[in-house]
Image 1: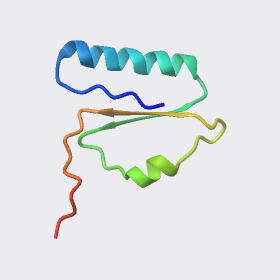
Image 2 (image 1 turned 90 degrees about the vertical axis):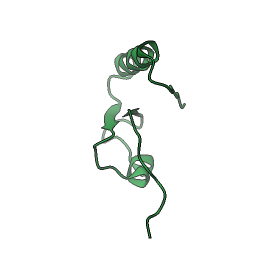
Image 3 (image 1 turned 60 degrees about the vertical axis):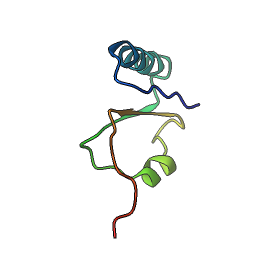
Length: 72
């Protein structure tokens, strides 16, 4: 399942963080990864990864403003 929250309204950000916490409590054994704008990450690695002991994982992308176009 994919949840998307867009915008910089504090209420929207609070809702996203609240949902993240609720999912982590519901799936305590799920792997959790929080990615922020300054983190170096690879989408392929995230999409193809899996938890060590549990097949569910939660990825929280926070405040991403990254240019994904290929540079020449």
